[in-house]
Length: 235
Image 1 (cartoon, helix red, strand yellow):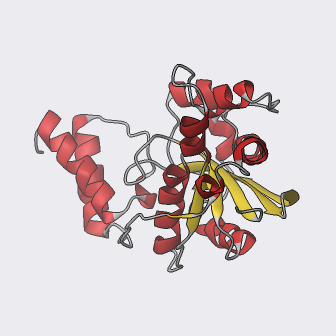
Image 2 (cartoon, helix red, strand yellow; image 1 turned 120 degrees about the vertical axis):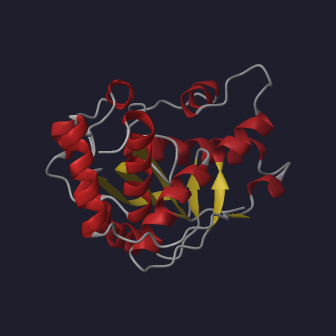
């Protein structure tokens, strides 16, 4: 059973790591079951948040406006995490966003992980909801808050420790490390020609984007351009 790891959680603008962006990272460094350090930062997603995301997390656009971009903080996070395995509630979700950011920064991020969601599905009754909030309530863990990165990373750590204490001696194999597999290719920046073409389309069709075009990759700007042409037509 694993006792040293980095428990982590992200708040993101959506659920797709290919299209959506990280807006908050929270992590706790756990050594021999004890929290030794924490990491927390807002991340500028360079786009306006949807109202449902702000309602869910309590994070507002003005809190992110002066925050660093992911390219400025991913190195800090990777140094904080070191070579330890990562733990989270549906940890592959957080891992996929971080893996893409690491690859884009020219860094590697291969890890084994512990998924508290899988453990909750194994040890909680079928009729109980298995999201982090409900799992913590079921196991009597008090949460500082919900849908904020650092608080949720601490909750995932405490949830793992509680389940390990209850079931580890009977089913130690459930608490072992699993490989985290997510393939990501480095994204290429958009060309000036792509940006100019998109700006011309926006001006011609009188469209206001919620994203900052200077921070779009080649694939992202291509998708947006194709979508505008399919909906509104060419110039």
